[in-house]
Amino acid sequence: MFKKILIANRGEIALRVIRTAREMGIKTVAVYSTADRDSLHVRFADEAVCIGRPQSSESYLNIANIMSAAEITNADAIHPGYGFLAENAKFARICNEHGIKFIGPTPEMINSMGDKITAKETMIKAGVPVVPGGQGLLQSVDEAKGIARDMGYPVILKATAGGGGKGMRIVWEESELEKAYDTAKAEALASFKNDGIYMEKFVEEPRHIEIQVAGDQFGNVCHLSERDCSIQRRHQKLVEESPSPFMTDELRHKMGEAAKKAASAINYESVGTIEFLVDKHRNFYFMEMNTRIQVEHCVTEEVINYDLIKEQILIAAGHRISGKDYYPQMHSIECRINAEDPYNDFRPSPGKITVVHQPGGHGVRVDSHVYAGYVIPPYYDSMIGKLITVAQTRQEAIQTMYRALSEYVIEGVKTTIPFHLQLMQDERFRSGDFNTKFLEGFQLK
Image (cartoon, rainbow, N blue to C red):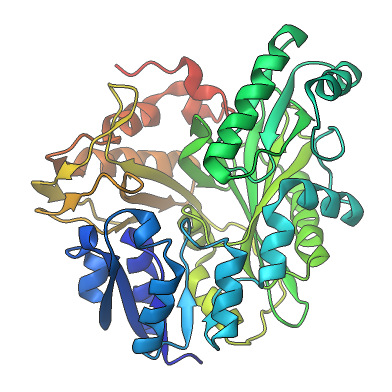
């Protein structure tokens, strides 16, 4: 087992890893930018090293500075969290070259799933359903038009190196295609330094359902059931839950088996997530694989009583997984509490938090790194924390969430709490009648 883990991240996920490592008897090293010197992950780690100025490129994305911090503290492993360098194959390779274990998959696995065209081809070979679409990257607008005519509108253009909705455009008719093609390529280049785009059939009224998987170094793979992430705004998730209210036992089995095929196809090692689009007829299609821990891993932990960060560390240390699949025993919902103004198009609201009162009680979990007096910097993701509830049924989990949100007090910055309070009372949401387009007609009162 590792003696000391450096967490190459910040905020709530860094604190989350520190907590599990401490329970496992493993020392931890926090790294931080000058903007994060007062963050809780810095206070609770056994050691802390400043790695640069506030800009991510000079700190949390600065591989040389992170590796130097690992060397001077004698860390024998690095946990990347999510975001930043979590799916950076170059970083994983450099860790390995320096004899420091990257807690995650191998560089080859990251590369195989990081490029969406390569991932799609791999899934086709593995027999995993994929969204109908053109083969390979688009070379011209004319080629795109020809494929779209054959496939039928609507279609969607996607950046091959994309994520978070960047480089993505939905096209409803041919007259819109050329402009969408140009803007998607430009946005992809600006966001990922790669302007490659491809086309798929656009799945209407889809659910976004993902399957948590785990694989070890010995070829064992299991799934840990599903999460429904359909409540999104501009492709950014706001609420996640497990199990999905749309799921049937038959569909859960089929998607679980498909997810295991996907992981086995690349001999996946670590925990990860296979993301699917599921249409209103319950046909499902592979979308992408996230080769890291995800923000919403907490809901899976709650419904199966399973520490996914601990599992990540154990797998990286060479332990075998049981190989058995897991199914929800409870119902859990997660609301992302962001420093954003829901009454002003969710505009970021950085600044000093003057008052914090976090909810508690039975079935309530808060994963957060903030406190009264903490300053939310403008340089990073606006997440304040995650509020998670768990109960025997979905309706009870919603009721507990509404009660917990009502208790959650954060002053000094705007937050998404008012949005979540209204959502928990929305009849369509409460009935489970929603898809990824649900928030397009949602009016905040």
